[in-house]
Length: 573
Figure 1 (cartoon, rainbow, N blue to C red):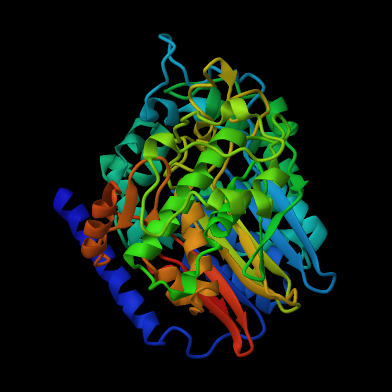
Figure 2: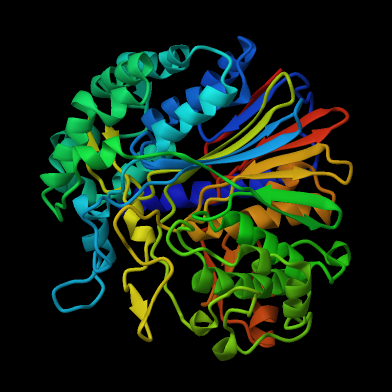
């Protein structure tokens, strides 16, 4: 098994290098789509979305069809047992809207959700696997809300492709096979083991598997809308799976499901070098933190720095440290702890904070703390708050015939969420995005668990507009907290280095927070790593499997690309 996984890893690194070389010589943009385009995280999902677009469906319609397929063919990443954030642009009305389908904590949850009997935080596996980590899923509710406002085709028609695949069977992809092979905890849950580890053996690449229970669930949702999910047999199955979980069962009730509401939130927008960057506000930290990273770099002429050079990576990772310090101190569910958003993205505040950055020296790691934006609770500034989130997420970018655009990031976390299955789909472990220790220095943290609360997310669905207000780009990625620097990296590539979308996505991933400077391995960065260490960085080489999906709008058509590190694809006409 170890040799097989090692081979998978070697092949993955080779594919990244080959794909990066291919896009650099222009082979990825031969005949760009002009009418409509979709980029999804799996080819079967892309096909389902494209079929909807060809029938005259809207961007929302296409995203729904793609999501139903993604929940089937890549259950380790997303599905109807999780949640989503959507950023939507209506071209004719020039209207930007954001939709919050983040999971909520059941009414039974207390701030001590992830503390053991000894008062110490639980270990990650103990917290994730089982019922304790499951939030009330928001995926179906938020898709229904978005479809009600922007759908064009009948709701029921958007489930056809996924139902057909679930009943006929679909081939196990390399990535799914690898995820199942690595995840020993799937064997702890009987329903999950029976589906993906039959007879004790993990499914393998190319195996064709069916999911008749998922097809039945989708038929109920297609016919009844959210009532087919949040009540009736599907809801009963969710409650049973969580309350009878063999590990960490908790009280999730039918009332918790019935009372779930998707919400519309105000988008978070700011200007970076004449481009307007718009994303999700809390409970997503994506819009705020991405914008902070870019604005902190804005006083430097990044265009003159060589991509993936020592100086470029140094500046980018140092800006991340400052932005993530603010994120940790001040952001959470805005319905519980109103965040100081205007202060956090105020140009004057960020320009002042940017003065902590230098192209030639590193900041003293021991003294990095949150800034003092207007309206913030400054007693939270110096807290060090760990993040336990794992990278089980997917993204869809769409532009339809009318120029309406959608960026949707969707997740069960995990991989495979809580590892619990109900009615043919995996249930999320999103509650582990809360801080495990609810208080620090006698202060309740903004992202502490609580009944009905939505945990802080890093999902960063993003739309970008040029200086004339025209749509310029649609972008997003999976990757846990690293989603934010993945998206920010791509935006720097598009805006500062004027790259095509594929080239910007293929740039090496370089991330940091309060710990090491992390460089993507297999990308010929050994010399940069040595130079960064000499500057004072603690450097860690590691796999960073982003799954960026993006579209750049050009006069020649839609310049769209999927990340070579995963299985995404582009479809368009």
